[in-house]
Every structure is written in C-alpha cells, then in structure tokens.
Image 1: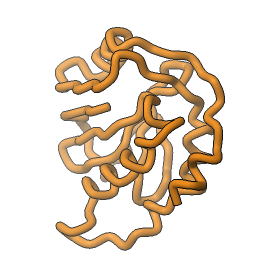
Image 2 (image 1 turned 90 degrees about the vertical axis):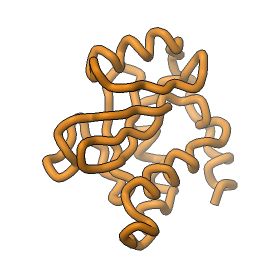
Image 3 (image 1 turned 30 degrees about the vertical axis):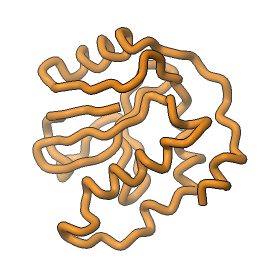
Amino acid sequence: MCRLFKKKKLPTRAEISHNDLRALLQAKFPVVPLYLSDNVFRLCDITDIEKFLDLDETNKIKYQAEKMDCDDFAYRLMGQLSIPPWSNIAFGICWTDKHALNLMVDNNGDIWFIEPQTDACRSSLEDWQGSNVQFVIM
C-alpha cells in the first residue's frame, strides 16, 4: 500500500515553524499539552488529505474493543502519513475527554479533526468524540 502513496506527489505548500505552529495550536487549545516533533512543518490543503484518505484503507479495518479501537486507528493513520512526501505535514493525533482521533493544520491555518475510522474531516468535534481536546502530538 505504501507504494501508492509514494507515487503521489504532495503539492508544494507553505511551511510553518515549530514556534508558529505551537502558537496557532495554543490559541485554539490554551491549556493542552502539545508535543511537536519537527522544527518545520509543511501545510497542505484539506483536499490533499482527502485524496490521501481515498487511497488509505485504515477506515476499512474492523473495530475491536481494546485490540483495534480509537487510539489504534489514530496511530495507524498517522503512521500511514509518516512516509515521504507526507512525513513533515502538520498532522498528528489528539485525545479528547472521550476519544482519540487525528488532527491537522491546513495551509490556511485552519485546524481539522480527522476521524480515522470513517475518514470524516471536520472543523469541530462531533458530540460523541468529546468536548475537550486534552493532548496533541505531531
């Protein structure tokens, strides 16, 4: 499956520094621990991620409590995006008070929640996903 992703070139997009990304995320989640792994991140459009999700099969895996549940789906999708040319985009995992899912910052500075079990991309959490982000790692 990784071969499919390597063939797809990610369009050239803006970059954001570690400090600027931290500031953007802190403005949205002021008391949330943030762990950012790189000095520079690339920003892509949400449509780039939607195209990636069309190829990815994480959402086709069967849910199994404790064996393949929300955190496992979120880690798997993040792992799928941990290959060039995707590996330095502003994409990660967030935990809420109820759920684990993915999060990204697009080239407009907008924050998107990505549900790895369904590929839904939303600008806000759905009620069942929780009400407060508690942790973010990118």
